[in-house]
Length: 314
Ligand SMILES: Cc1cc2nc3c(=O)[nH]c(=O)nc-3n(C[C@H](O)[C@H](O)[C@H](O)COP(=O)(O)O)c2cc1C
Image 1 (cartoon, protein in one colour):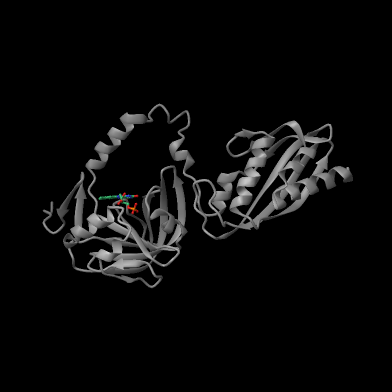
Image 2 (spheres, protein in one colour):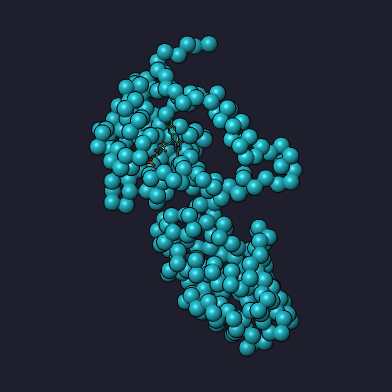
């Protein structure tokens, strides 16, 4: 029993803390199966090795502590925690440089002295949640009950486009600074006020946007509501021009986010959540600074821009 204990601990540490994944060959049976308790997805030994190497590449300094290992006949349970710095990208999620602690437990069975099966209360989605990058998986994987009403494919796209064309918004420029301190930004109308107390706002940004990596890394962002005389600024920030800020004057907010001069209103906010919604990330941020002006805002509807000063009150 003590021998088995030592074997588990040694192979575990070698694989997770030093990347010596082939040491798991001594510990797992050839037909080993690992199941995620959260998603029910299953992987084999090769899949586990790949996952360890992927996570280690993203967290090169990771260290794991086995807090408890219980072996009872052929059954076992391991409780562990891992700390590491999110140094390199993990799949499509850009590294944030933040230090994270994640914990989980594995429960499984031995067969002929080797682990044949384990169920794990942890997977990469939980790691991402610990990193403040939870996935809105439920939103795009409808369950059996909602699938009846679910619109899908081209029909959904057209139906939603039609719906969105009836929705009137303002237009903002979302800004941040990149690793070299250069200002970055894009036009966005996905702004919404979430709550006043605490003062939370949200913005959705496409992962293909050239501003996205800088925004994702950043701790703060700026949101500028464009005024009617900023039509050119809107065109600039709706483009992929590499130097959009050469064409505007701006000042830094208290946390350094670029706030565009002449906007109808600007806020600076601290990024609190980065929800993954497949092609987009929903940033939720807490407002730390606000500036408003008398400038009339641009109004956006169905691909066209209007003068927010000539609206007729109902
Ligand atoms: C009115 C308007 C609203 C937009 N809203 C968004 C938005 O909410 N999120 C987003 O990711 N892109 C939005 N875009 C598209 C981006 O501004 C556009 O893709 C831009 O080229 C991105 O620049 P970048 O790749 O340099 O970051 C919007 C564009 C316009 C004209």
